Length: 244
Image (tube, rainbow, N blue to C red; front, top):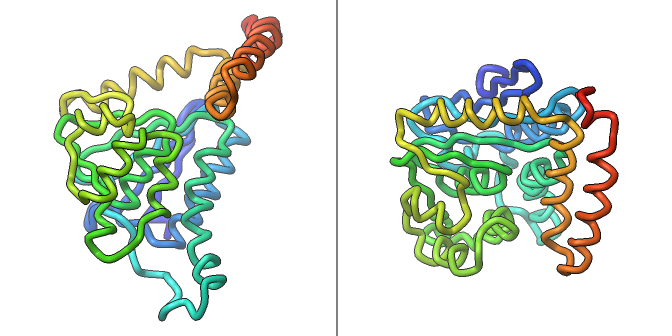
């Protein structure tokens, strides 16, 4: 599977690349499991993760290759089979370091979920995003779970019910992506974001991700107290004084 997923440490970053340009970046269950392990492992020696895909499209969805054959005999087994996908989404959320993605072409179904669950997603102007599952008689709460803390209710329901491919600017308005740039500026924009993270002290990088992960589920008072305590603790740490 090494040729389907590239994983390389460059400086302080782990770069994970879907290397399946021939099929639009389709992801099999074994690939999803392997990438979750890569994300978990990157937390041990990296400052951030860069997630990309080779080819014209970011990811056209899941590849049936490697799935267990036949229909699950009961709900318990169906839940077990789906765990690989939920664990993959979970690896982005439990990551202590930020995951930055650059998306080009189409991001459909599983691909749309990846674009959503990354901490920062830069999209090419011509990029398109969709959740087509309902059109294939699939009830897509699996994919919707990737949007729940990223995309507003109206955007999530429109994507789900309409199955329409939305453009990058609409995805930006939904909160699905962070920034939209001209197609020929995608690499430069990604490099700019990476350079900014490279310059930031490690305690700040970790603490921003921790705050973003936890504060959004708190009351305003709790989030303010959390911010007050983190601000005092982190900004007086040795790591913020030049020891990255």
